[in-house]
Image (cartoon, rainbow, N blue to C red; front, top):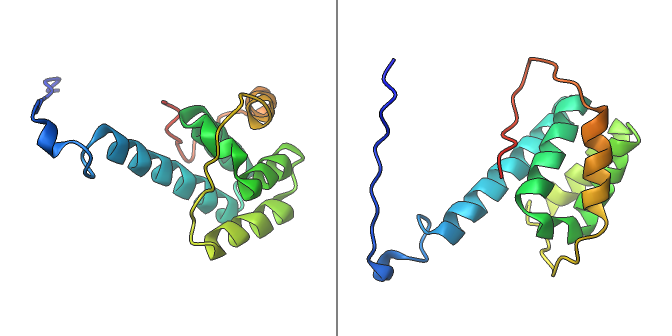
Length: 131
């Protein structure tokens, strides 16, 4: 098994800020985590949806200010898949865009911690939990 890793560092600041910039990469990863959450909710996989929710909030705590995501998290915490699907559909109808407001460190983080203690790994779908 080849364990080598190719790495290219470009120190030219003219290339910063595009889709390959740290900010652009962060937005792409946030979008991927949100899509994983929405997909698992629509598929009806409650455990994977909980893991995806925790991964998204841990990756970017500022998303916890989005009203639909907050409702999705509450629905997942109470195992209400019907409500989670409803709010996921509302979020998709809004174009899948999260409303990012300043994060004060409260709210969904606690909810995410509660969900983390309830989860068990099902072995079917893997969610990227890295921040």
